[in-house]
Amino acid sequence: MIELEQVSFRYQNEASHVLENINLTIEHGEWVAIVGRNGSGKSTLAKLLNGLCLATSGVVRVNQTVLTDESKHQARHYIGMVFQNPENQFVGTTVADDVAFGLENLAVPRETMIKRIDQSLEQVDMTIYKDHEPSRLSGGQKQRVALASVLAMQPEVIVLDEATSMLDPIGKKQVLSLIQELQEQLGVTVIMVTHDLNEAALADRVITLDEGTVWFDGKPRELLEKGDQLHEVGLEPPFVTKVYQQLTRQSIDITQEPLHYEELVDELWRLYLKT
Amino acid sequence: MEIVFEDVDYIYQPNTPLEHVALQGLSFTIPSEFFTAIVGRTGSGKSTLLQQLNGLLQPTSGTVTVGDTRLPGAKSKPLKELRRRVGLVFQYPEHQLFEETVKQELLFGPKNFGLDLGQVEAKLPQVLQDVGLDESFLERSPFTLSGGQMKRVALASVLILDSEVLVLDEPTAGLDPVGKKQLLQLFRYLNEEKGKTVVLVTHNMEDAMANADQLVVLNDGCIDSVTSPKHLIEKRDQLEAIGLAAPESIKFVDYMQQTLGVNWNEDEATVDTVSQALIKRIKAGANK
Image (cartoon, rainbow over the protein chains, first blue to last red):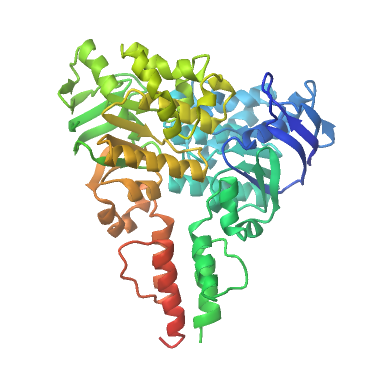
């Protein structure tokens, strides 16, 4: 469980706060999406969770332990982070070395290590690149390797900071279904920073940040119900949401806010056209 | 400025165990003042291709002709000139930042190319405004900015050179939807009003189809097709096989045709056309 109590954060020498008075509890096994415009504090929030940034005031607690300069290393054993720009996290000369790095730090026995490296590279579909140099890979391939490095550590919590932004549509789908699998089958807590509301719609819960404060915290459907208000916080309602709004204006209604076009079309069929 | 690829191969680390053929037999033309999108799955060679456009990488075999410069073989002076005429914004443009203030960052390129700094400084406010920043950023350190803001600064540092060709590698990845829309509008404006040749590398089919005159589809280092957005939509069932996907609006239309038997003969799938088609279908009732 991750708890934030009255957390504020300000970068050194900067006058204004990036985050202000954040109170949040993220339960074990939850899938939480964090959305908001650029500069709203999303990435900073993500970094507070594993001690990459330490709160200027307030308390961040991970599994009952308050995150401090001393305790943060411990927290990193169970919180894995994948960044938007994976180049920042490469250390190995080959893809396999890179995945091994985190495991070596945890002193994982060699046999287990080999097994975990193979398994995690397979999960992200990068097995054939095992002996390649990470720096020679394409942007999307790098993101997969970074994800594999985190998966190999078998963390309780995975924080993804726009980790699918460089993936092609099919790759994105694969990674998202892998994440879904980890959450459902292994009970991994997933915290995903994204700009894509279609992606956020997959989560159990969406937190919307605006100017360093929580603007919305609830189910994806409730967020989409806000419709045009989303523009106020730099978000764009998905295509299906806009179509649904037009339909409601013409008094064509369905039982709940659709998350996906298939849901909308299926409901229209059931309510209006099925004989 | 026209760009012509003739039978271009590019091989990373040739004659080593890590030899990797990134591009193979590419022949196509990017016409002057066109908006061209280069699309393809992760690892299909998009980023390798665009580094050929200003000579950062040069063909292992074949030739790339950019305006009157032919690669490989150009000497260092024409090569430098080429880099001023072809502005390149990288995938992670925040990597290009290194100066102490945003202002120094923006003036670095012009200084390096020997441009008149007085003139360049006069353009700073406009360029900042174009990328959605204001003058208050000039004295800030680039490293205290958010990811999205860094991206805008990096873009401004290329725009200020007023290059004839703008090459953009996933320029909107990581930007919020509002920022993304602004930048795409800016690229369109630079193309349509200022006559810039724009080359956009992306795997976002929405952006590619909505903005480009021409699409170059790459698959595994080879040209799959050079086509228009309209033609590519007609062949959309082939997209998934090469790692791409039709825009959500098009998938929506396909699904409502299949499931509801909606009559569809619109040119474009917009919120309005899709909603109207659905309303019409529902009003026609169950027995249609």
